[in-house]
Length: 365
Picture 1 (cartoon, one colour):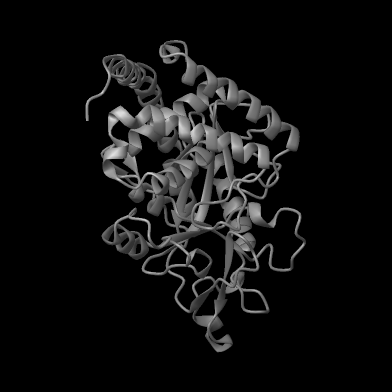
Picture 2 (cartoon, rainbow, N blue to C red; picture 1 turned 90 degrees about the horizontal axis):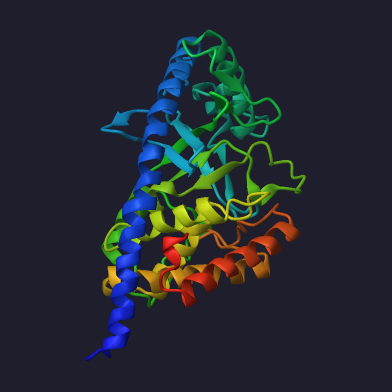
């Protein structure tokens, strides 16, 4: 197919702009984040070593694989979440009946086995392993460890939350979340995935993702905000971090995500945090379904994909709803203020209009 010369120049200009943006802004963000991760993880490893001495059931799984840390998620350049995997659940069953969006519970398969559980004192009278009880114990241990560790002058526990959050050198916030890995399992609330008749993801990749499974995290569940349910403290939040990262391999999907995160940090870091990197990643996964062919993720198409994701983001902000990719009943905007979402929609629209109408926009962004 012959492309008119003026189209070609516009397209090659955009590819040049994106490559330049990636080489300058995105790589600068990446190297700064990589430096911060090293600094933050040194402190957290020291705190967790101290925790392990006091309570051997909380074994740190934060390991450095050539600069990459297992279980670490970058929320923003100054905010991180570190998941520590607890020893196996053993005699507990995974129960996901859809009553708690984004959450599930762990229940004793048989009351008589209570004493066989490694976590016996955190099991409620009804036989549920309480996420909040485990977190509360972990919080106490981390607070004590902060006072004893080598970095005690530069690390503080953030007090007004049930989550385990540390402030490091007054600059960074790290949430440490106890979790269970559920490999080879797939939750019922995500059983609609993948959508049939869409060529992406490839069946082999789907099989890999489902074998990888998901994690159950002891943290505040957004799906339960405002719900005074008896299960609230016992429920575990479902997380698909590894599955999401696996799906974004191949072509320029990860490159696209890095550009989106950089644009978000520079222009959409708004009061109340209405737009997070996780919203960007979620909409990128939906965009992969809309554009299922690898060729649609070549560098020459990247500007179109980014614009498509921003237009979808505006739509979500205006409808005040952003469904989780694997758990569509979970709204990722739950708890965000309507005025914050409204303001974000205007801001994203300004950014999108600039990118659509000005081929040199990225030089200023």
